[in-house]
Amino acid sequence: MAETIEQQIERTMKQAFYDLIDENTNSENPDYDWIVRLYTEMKEKLLFYLRKDGTTYKSIDESFDVELFSQMIRNDVFSPESMIKLVDNTFFWIKSLGAPYRDTEIDNSKRKVLESPLNKIISVFLKEVHVCLSFYDEDMKQILQEKN
Image (cartoon, rainbow, N blue to C red; front, top):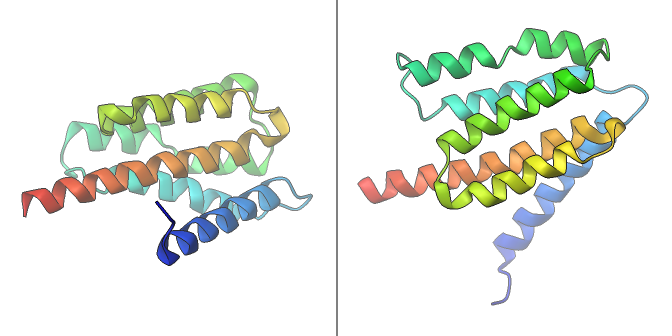
C-alpha cells in the first residue's frame, strides 16, 4: 500500500526530530534544557492516562526524578550502571502500561539502547523511548475511541 501524504509528512517530521536529538546530544555544547524537557515529556506521557491518586501514577512520578536526571546529564556523570538502571526503569514502565502485542517492539527498542555505544546512548535512549511512547499513545487513543 502506498504511503499517503500525511504519512510521508509524519515520517519526515519524526526523522527530523530524531536527527535533532542526535545533533543536540552529540554536539560539543548540548542544549541540556531541551534534553531535560524531553525526559520530562517522557514522564508526562506515561502519566497522562493514569489517575493522579493511583499507586501506579505515584510510582512512576517518584521513579522519574527529573532533577536528578538534569544534574547527571549536565555534569556528565552517568555511569554505565546508572544508565542501565534508567533504561530498565523506563522500559519497564512503558512495557507495563502498553499493550502486550507491543512487547517485542519495546524489547527491541530497549536492546537498541543497551547495545548502543556509550557516546550515543542518550540520543538512542531518547529516540527509542519516544518511538515506544508514540505506540502507547496510539493504543490509548484507540481504546478511548472504542469506549465512545
